[in-house]
Length: 326
Image 1 (spheres, rainbow, N blue to C red):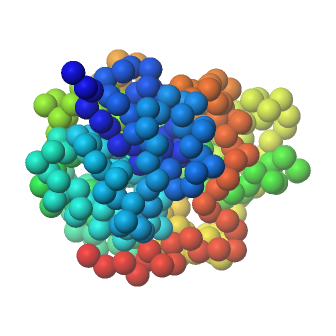
Image 2 (cartoon, rainbow, N blue to C red):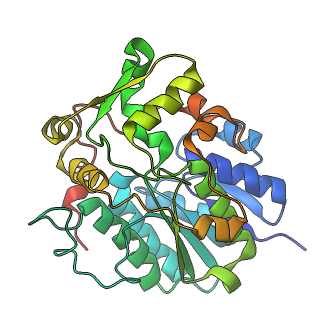
């Protein structure tokens, strides 16, 4: 009897690589890994992908072949690709007779269906509504729910691997990094933990996890000085944190990302959730351990820190996505 097929979108991303390795080692599914460009195919096969599918959220011509015979989907997309995801969710809805389960990566705070709040009132300061990026994450969830699909959602805290990527050059060359978070404590989450949680949801299936929403965080909230100390210990050199004001940060990355960082700086992501433990039976990965130990894909967090990054100083990666309407 043939195994069910799971489609892993964003398979070459940090979460996707970890999830792919976990699924390949388990054997429950035939694992079909999506890639945007052929130069990633060998790496994905090396991690255990049974099949490779060329896939582009902005190219509907790639969707049919990727979805052929699929019964489960791991759904993840870069923040600027919201519009493509909304369209893809509608396409998945047309196949809801065969797609039994969708696991979606989202963000803590995309709580519209599980909590009662008005986005205009849920403010990090007087007169400020919920950050647009969090509204986008909810729209990403809602599109799948409205399509009539059995959905499980991982609402994650801010990723450890995204925290310092924009400062990789200054860390290597000068031993310092900068952002506006200061003494605010945030329970940053390891992407390998998100992958492990997604693995549990997919392998245990929709019978147990359909229409469930899980907050995935790190094991403790940390300040930037504590993050610098952990990074310095991992690199065996002195690393310092330099506070940055929000105005300069907004000039670097744009208003959409800046309002999200203001949210972080005001304590909304300090909470540590038990959901990861309840899914896996063990604590989430601490930041130092993330940096110094290898995940399922064989890479440490420190090795991954120096790799490519969506967010670049002087560019507003969210400029087009900020205009998307639902």
